[in-house]
Amino acid sequence: MERISLPWLDNRYCQLIILLDGAADEPHELLGGKTPFEVASMPYLKRLIHQGFVGEYQTIPAGCIPSSEVANLMILGYDDEAKNVEGRAGFEALGLGLHFSSSTLCYRCDLHHYPSNLCIPKEIGILYRGVGHRHIFRPNLERQTEEQAIAGLQKFIQLTTLESPHIWGRSIVQGIRFEPFQQRYHFRHPYMISAVPVMWGIAKALSIPIEFVPGATGETDSNFRGKALQAMKLIEEGSDFVYLHIEAPDEASHRKNPLEVKEILERIDYEVIMPITEWRTRIPDCKPALTILPDHYTSSTTGRHLDKAVPYLHIKS
Image (cartoon, rainbow, N blue to C red; front, top):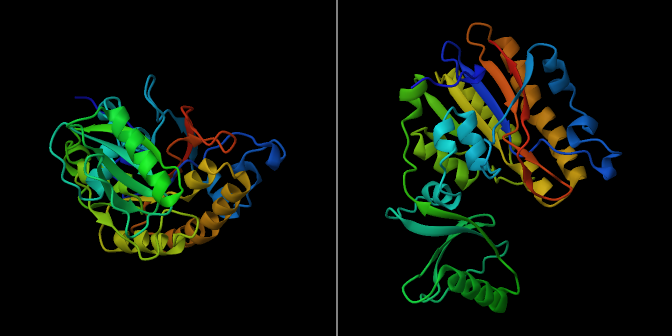
């Protein structure tokens, strides 16, 4: 099968990808009719623009829901698989180490305050505790429909925690073990750095080892600098492909806070792009190619993902 040609999948070069989740945004009135990227002070990124190639990539195929699992599979060169994704929750469950049998139905459940004594009645289903606000719900369908199970979970949580959970990402667990990334693109030592379960699940589905960084939370308080240092360390130790995923911009946009997105981008410029840029100048013999891009648009006006083509910057080694 002929594979799509993406510059960051060229195995002739060591590749470092900085993936800014949901960082592409629409103009916002709070930013004077501009986007967070346009108003953010990002001197290190702006210097890099003159050193590489700027293009666009359609990470959401026609007819697909604009979601992180689809977009990141497309970026990683799994376009056919991305077009046939069975929902997000299956990847999150895989990332959390939940071993569901084939055809198991599950959902993503957003719950910001998860009491230690929260015990969901078995007749409703099982709520698996995840990371941060990201949990997995497996409904019990022996004596009820999906809709009844979801309504039962929502009612129970509202009565016990006074919080209204958001239940979404319906997934039927099947077929999310794909051809290994190393086999498809012939990188010898690829790694994924991320703090969120959906990316862990994608990495596991592609047989990419995952690196965990202390203090990396997938939120605005995440240890950005630590993730950058870990990426550099992996390449110095022989990795030829590092996928550095940063979740925070997407979370801020879902909160409809463009000012927070701007602040996050400025932190990323100083804590991630600056040290990586300076490091690349010190290692001329093994300087990696560098790609910086979002996986999808997330509108800080509506809080929703969009299916527009995303910009990317690629600099060869």
